[in-house]
Length: 68
Ligand SMILES: [Zn+2]
Image 1 (cartoon, rainbow, N blue to C red):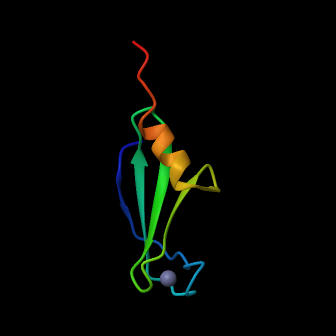
Image 2 (cartoon, protein in one colour):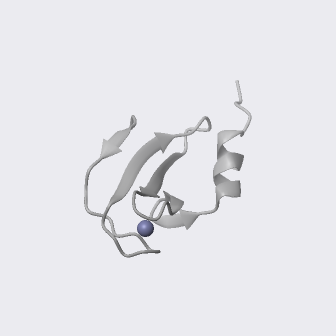
Image 3 (cartoon, rainbow, N blue to C red):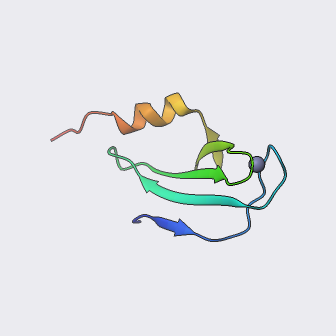
């Protein structure tokens, strides 16, 4: 739970460098996703439960209406 920057060695799928930043995020719907950003080639991607997530899917989760 929570959010923060985690420093661990992650290899970029595009340029194979290990300068990837990983940020854990909890979206409005309560879905926990990981955001990855490569510092070298600016490659960015999302991950949820170990599988890659399309940006559209992330936006869908973020904009999901809250049930009161
Ligand atoms: Zn890269």
